[in-house]
Image 1 (tube, rainbow, N blue to C red):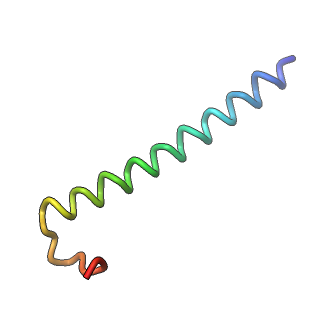
Image 2 (image 1 turned 30 degrees about the horizontal axis):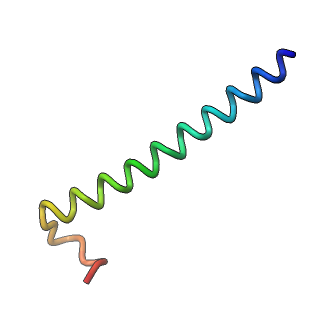
Length: 44
């Protein structure tokens, strides 16, 4: 049964990493909009 706990741990770690990347991208987009970063011209 140790493999069941191992698989759950790996899946939890992957989900945590994916959620962190999505959160980081969302936060960086908001930061660029709030600060009016002149170097970020991708939205124009």
